[in-house]
Image (tube, rainbow, N blue to C red; front, side):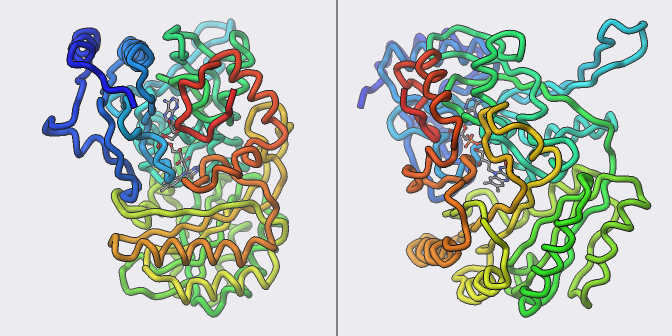
Amino acid sequence: MAVPTAERIGALRERMSGPVVAPGDQEYDEIRKVHNGLVDKYPSLIARCTNTADVVAAVKLGREAGLEISVRGGGHNVAGKAVTDGGLMIDLSLMKAVGIMQGTGGSPVGHVEWTNVRAEGGVTWGELNDVTHADGLATPGGVVSTTGIAGLTLGGGFGWIQGKYGMAVDNLVEAKMVLASGEIVVAREASEPDLFWAIRGGGGNFGVATSFEYRAYPLTTVLGGIVAHPLESAVDLMRLYREVTASASDDMTVFFGIVHAPDGSGTKLSALVVCHVGDEDDAAREVKPIKEFGPPIMDAIERIPYPVQNTLLDAGYPRGALNYWKSGFFSELSDEVAEKMAAALERAPHPLCGMAIEQFHGKVTRVPVTATAFPHREPGFNLILTGVWEDHAQTEECIAWTRETFESLRPHMSDRVYVNYLDKDDGTRVTSAYGPNYDRLVEVKRRYDPDNVFRLNANIVP
Ligand code: FAD
């Protein structure tokens, strides 16, 4: 592997406004770490960019020096693709600007026709939500506040309000990109339409996105929260889940969870997590069957600010914990699936291990499969099986548990998989993640990154 010379490092330091960090520097060890503590890689250089020009300088240096380039947004990718071993890490985590933009679209002055939110590539969903919420707005993002907007959006991005407003990519208006050539382009429908299509689901394959602009909607509070039942109720709760999701309006999204109580007691639970964006009466009516099922161990469904909804699951994913995940879309949600999930939790080696089913419905599923690079537009359910633990001594056991649980559920699943949940040994599933859009993605990759400079991702090989 190439090593950057002291001369090149000096030249990059001169060209960049942000700091350049190398092994031996005081903050090096902290900055090279990502969300998943299992990822332990050592870049030979970290470019901590503060603006688009810094990113251009870093990409050029990386190419000139023949260094493998990784790009870090929020650092949440469980496969650890944000960090390179021995190469150049382009770190956007200092790029935190978020702003609201409004336009009149040619109508009489004062009449606002559209409201967007623009955010830089190092912003997390919690940070973005705080800014939009202050203006009574929201845009669809992830369900955990610490996830980066960059990686999540480029892979598709689904969360609590997708039924009504669609995925993050369905609301992306434009992204500013630094290409492999070092050129800066703005990808939007009207300019660079192929690139704009590809970055809406094709991941970080096409360049470094330094800012994103999304449509924003008036939304301050939701009827949301968690209702928890004993693990023994898993099959009955799954039946209720099938019923409520079969008739759910676009306003309501519900996840099904087989998890441990977050209080550290180790209590094993079956649970539903609800988010309803409709008005108070509609929300109360639709959530009623969920509140009437039971008695629950805990019912914490109430009217809460939207940013709070986006922190409900945070405690289950502490930074630095060790992660190994498996995921895929179900082809059916039978009683047997619930039985298998509950039985697996009984054997779970650590109280942070668990699994959830995410509901795909509403607006997400009305976008044609080929309209954006994100292909998973069928109504249905996605499994996210999260092996999470804290002690390296348990790594083998926890990975084995995750793999065995996934294999037991596989007969109930299709081969479709969400690109953002692929783990490090899921390489053979990359084409399934892009589905019918893969061939067009290869064409766009050939045009924008023929040398595969951006390859630390769910890679589309040019
Ligand atoms: P990073 O690790 O920084 O980057 C991920 C990938 O994107 C890497 O390949 C990286 O090179 C590339 N990349 C990052 N930034 C840029 C950029 N600016 N330009 C170009 N390429 C870039 N997904 C959902 O859809 N919905 C959820 O609710 C959700 N919840 C999650 C909760 C947790 C706790 C975790 C760990 C993940 C969750 N995910 C969710 C998955 C998430 O979308 C992916 O992990 C995503 O990659 C995270 O983006 P990031 O910027 O934080 O990651």
